[in-house]
Length: 422
Image 1 (tube, rainbow, N blue to C red):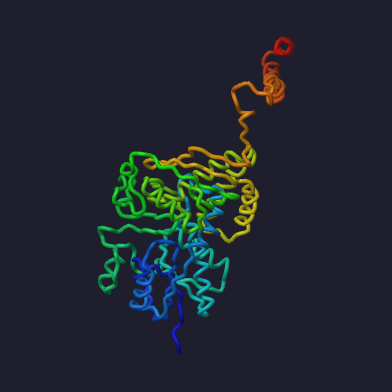
Image 2: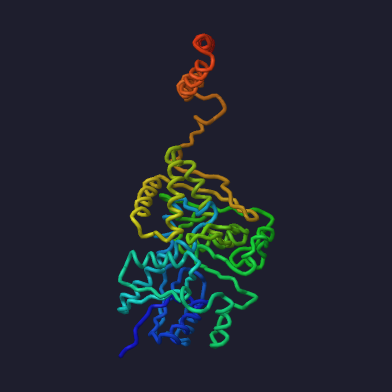
C-alpha cells in the first residue's frame, strides 16, 4: 500500500527541518516539501536539496514575490493599514498567500494533508489554517507544535543534534526570524525581556540609525492610483521597485520598529521588525493622500484602515469584509496620482515635497497674503451658524441656573453683541 502523502510548508529553518524528520519517524508519511519564495533571499536550490536529503520525496519552490506585492502589499498600502500604529504586517500579509500556494500544490499532487511548523502560541497557525479552511475545507491540518513532546526551541535544537539535522540556530543565536521582500521580523532570545534594549547586531536588512550616513538622501516616488510605479522618474516593475527602496532605506537606517504587540491568541509579544522600503512607501503614500483626499474621506478611511489592519493581522484576508473594504479603498485611490519627494536621514523617512494634478491644495485659497477668492468677512456668518448649538446650550444653562430674568439679560447681551459685530 502506498504511503499517505502530506504537504509540508517548508523553509529549511529550525522548525520545519525538525518536523520533516519527526513526521518520517512517527508517521512514515510520503512528504512533499513546498517552499515559497516571498523574496527572503535564500538559496532555494540548497533548500530543496536539504529537503530531499532529510526525507522529502519531492520539493517545490513557488515564486510568489510579484503576487505578494501586487495582490497583498499594494492593497494594504492603499488602505493605510498598520497594526497598532507600528507593525506593517509583513508576515501577516504573506501567510494567506503561502497557504494558497500550498493548496495549489496539494491539488496538483492529490493530497489532503498539510503540515506546518507554526507554534501553538503564535498568530501564524491561525493565518495558515483560516485561509486553508476558507479555500478548501476538505484539507486536514497537522500542527506538530500542538501535540508533540517538545516545548521550546532549545528542545528542537537538541533534537536536531541527536538526529544529525543541519540547522543554523544555536542556543546562543536562537532568534525566530521571518523574512520576505517586505520585511524581516526578529523574536525570542533576549528580546523576550522588554527591559533589554535590542542589540545592533540583530539587524539584517538595515544599519542602525546612528550608523547611517551623516547627510540626507532624497528619493522621488511616482504613484498612479495609489500604487508606486517609478523611482526618480524611472518606471520599474513591482519587485525591482520594492528592492530598490529596500536598498535606499536600509543604508539610511529607515524602518526598524521595536514593538510590544497584542497577539490574536491573547498574549503580548515583543518583536523587532525591519521594513525599510515599506516604511518609505507608507510615509510617501500618506503624504500624497494629504494633498488629494477631502476631510471626510480622510477621516473615514482612517477608521477603515484600523479594521483592515486587524483583519490582515488575524489572517482574515479571504473574507467578504476585507474584500468590501478593499473596494472602498480602491474608490478613494482613483485620483491618488502624483510624485512625492522623500527625505531619508538616520532612521527617519519624511515627506520633503509633493505634487499632483489632482491636488485639492490651492495656494490662492490657502495664502496668508491678499487674495481675490476668499472673502474673510464671510467667516462671521459661518462661525455664527457653526457655533449655534453651543450658543443655545449656553442660553439653556443660564436660564436653568438663573431663572427667566437671567435669560432675558443673556438674550440682550447676545443681541447687543450680534449688532456690534458686523
